[in-house]
Length: 298
Image (cartoon, rainbow, N blue to C red; front, side, top):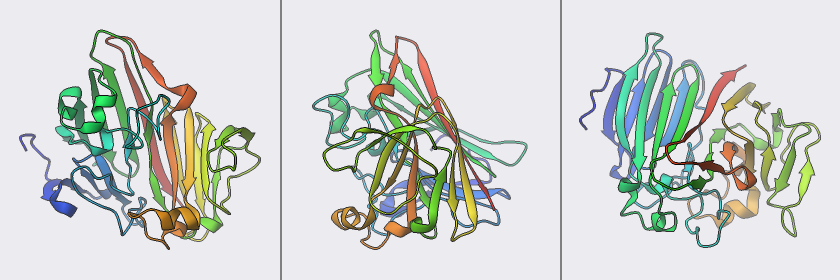
């Protein structure tokens, strides 16, 4: 690795022998794998871990890591167009990203910047379904807050359109006593509904009593209230039109080989996204940045 690292960052061999960058400062600890630019840990000083990773997660080339913050790009779910999936959620989380910068700031926070281009995914089979020139830059800042900024630039000569999401898995003590605030009044599609998704309106806080898979029209802040743990996780964002809320519950959890049957009460996904009708379109030379910031309070 040719990028100079500050003393607070070490390059190591992680799970599945994959290269990982580990950060340890007075403010927080964290780690990000080059595989998928996948953030798998962030723990503010004096706090419990904020991100959740399944004990059955698979680490290896071609595998999507179950937990942490997978990057969904250039499509979300099965995508808006035929022929994009499998794999679900695009190829960015399956590809080898490159570290292009590492900086420790005056306040003690650390930013790691990773990059992915069309040339980097030439050997990733799924990329053939979306053959467009692009550069994706991902700035991950570990500090008292976790800040994730995904910038996509159209480096080609024609227009491109894509979906994106930061599919963040948050650790909770018990999802059944957890709520999500900030989405009251928002329209959403319930992807877990019988008969397919139909637009509905959120009334009050989001609660969890069954499988939950909802795409909310919301550009605002969401707050995960973890009643059993006595903490709140705020998610502030920019450049995002959608918030996705997901928990597989019992049956879906049992159907996923990289997810423990009994793990579903201990996590919830609150995702920062631009998907479906909010897909991003870029003219040649244009770029778009989607940012999510996470903060823990008691």
